[in-house]
Amino acid sequence: MKKAYLVLLPLLLFGASAFAQEHDSKWGAWYMYFLNHQIQDSKFGIQADAQYRDWQLGGDFQQSILRGALTYQPIPEIKAAFGYAYFVNGPEGNAKTTSMEHRIFQDINFPQKVGTFISLNHRLRLEERWVEDQDFRTRVRYAAAFTIPITKNEHGATGFYFAIFDEIFINGQTHIGNGREVGLFDRNWLYGALGYALSKNLKVQLGALNQVTENSVKNNLQVSLIHSF
Image (cartoon, helix red, strand yellow):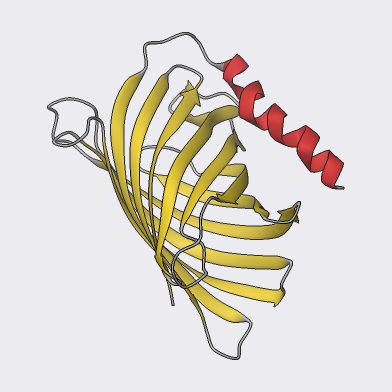
């Protein structure tokens, strides 16, 4: 099974870019806060995130996200989630118009160890999407995320670490209303970051994400605060 994962990951990392056309890369910025809480003496928990995305590094609103979910972990090797997300989207440039999206999603996560110290998490996500001015849509996402520790802090816990992940998005429908069509391949995210554990429950990450779609290639600076309690 581990060998299958190691074969699948490079295909995700590099294969999806073959579907994209050649375009100039553009830099934007994503600022993100993630919260995770496991209810004491329970298999249930909650997770949430708030994000602000900009077409540039600031001043050209792209998207805001509010998302929350109830999690269930029947065994340490599996974690499921069911949640809701609200999106506000803005066009690139000076236009002030926005559109909204409501989304329900289901996750299943499979954490594992690679060797003695590298962590790998597989996440499969199904989304049901109500996008303004479009027909009802669905989408499937698969992500493989590595965490590689570099140093320990003064308490013996992880200090600096590398975070690397790749995620591929596949549309459930190609017709989205009013005669418009999209491809089955929606996008691919390839991300790398340097992180630091400020404490056992608080981490900060600075990284870059490359997004490839059928029609564009875009790079984004990412700043993340990850809070567990």
